[in-house]
Length: 235
Ligand SMILES: [Zn+2]
Ligand SMILES: [Zn+2]
Image 1 (cartoon, rainbow, N blue to C red):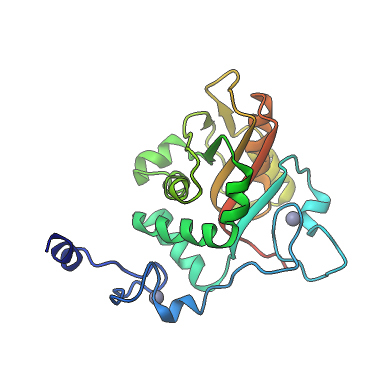
Image 2: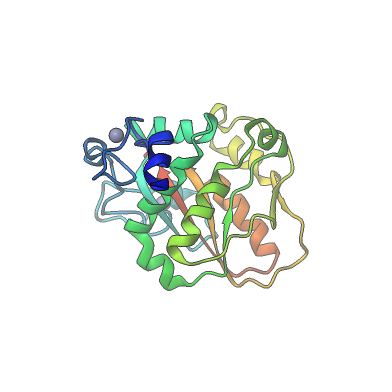
């Protein structure tokens, strides 16, 4: 009875269309489940982004930019419905969406991620002013949800965002990198981890993940991977 009452009070909603889920629907409604654009082969061997040309191994961004993380595990292409969904997750307090995203990452990459047996999942931090405004870090919610699926602990303390950076959207690639280079830091001098996985909501140019990876390397962590809900395709 408790369960039924709770369901009536807080019905589960579809994280893509926000309709109430039917009793035989789990995490996402049937209509939306067909609309999801999953990352599909061929993919960049570094960041995991879809590439058009089967002959190449890396996407343009990875070929041109510095990449010191080992490999990325994005689940979906950043388009259509997922774009709006993630915006709500980030800015409109739709915290419960994190389970759906984590499950999608798990569905696509769970076996590989589990086999890596990382020491910790590390959410990309947000600046503390933003944290105060929003009340939560969406990447941390995602890491917490993913933790249960891939059986890895979350460490939200070792990375900090120390400068208020300009919105990345308004900058070109070089400016983005400079903007982010000093944006991340750590509270620690060194840590006991050898292998970790960064967790973020959206991967675009890779500058954020790269900047975080550099800090983690400085702490003595050798192997850094990342995962994200979605990855931006560039034209
Ligand atoms: Zn839906
Ligand atoms: Zn790439």
